[in-house]
Amino acid sequence: MNQSVSNFKQFGWPVRVYYEDTDAGGGVYHSNYLNFMERARTEWLRSFGFEQTVVKDELGVIIVIHSISIAFKRPARFNDALEVNCRLVNVGGSSIEMLQTITCDGVLLIEAQVKAVFVNAVSFKPVSIPLPIKQAMMQFDG
Image (cartoon, rainbow, N blue to C red; front, side, top):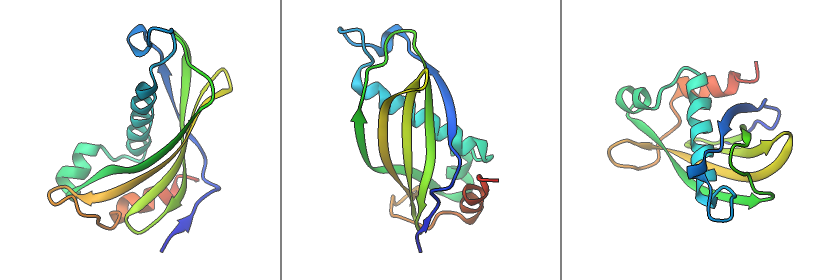
């Protein structure tokens, strides 16, 4: 059963752009935005009290990316202070969908639709979202 959670609040994580993140043109190299979004999703999960290593070791589950649709609106540049945001929009039986955005001084740079799937850590086959994680996600709105 899917549950829409469009009223969930947004989780933000700050990221500074370093010189190594940029390309020859001075903007952030496109694949580095994926790294920034991964860090924010990891910190979002951690904010619920779930370390990915514990999720794997104790619950036997890992979270993998199924798909990402990304729109590059404007470039980030060296030394920019970015806000990488995550907002859960749908919870399924074994997957979640998120809207992730990256902004700089309130200006939208990146918008991405992300689908992540919970899989068995050994077989990599989809499994139900562990109840403690699902409950924490659903209570994030307070």
